[in-house]
Image (cartoon, rainbow, N blue to C red; front, side):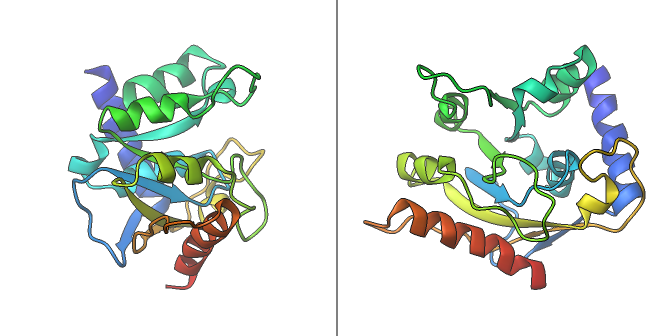
Length: 203
């Protein structure tokens, strides 16, 4: 019950601060298994893209959260588990650990996920080169729909290093799905996926 109330509060807060406008170009909001992949410039990205999804999609879609940051305090951990049902990714990688394992488990379970293929937040206008995780997931789950998304302006609401948000209109633009082509090499696919995200900036 408390988690549901917090969910409503966060949705209201995000909508007041940003408008949380969702724009669908190239694909409609649809209850099918998807990997949403987006640019990453703020901790608020996770909340923004989650809030932009319709309720029926939000309930089946799990964002990825950095374990070291989002488990630092009991409150952050509660928010990410009870409210967002997030999947933790351990950035302190060890040689015997596959960082994609929790994402693979979620996809095998039938969940949709939200990932940020840059791996960490960037300060530049354009996304950093995408890391290889998206390619590995696309290869392992060819039937899961890959949907690019551009989160606009959120870095001005709560940029890296800031903790107090300021109200500015923001939007999330969802684009046409892409597919891993037969024989397509890792870097070529990742560059194409990144370009699909960047292209949505000017839609």
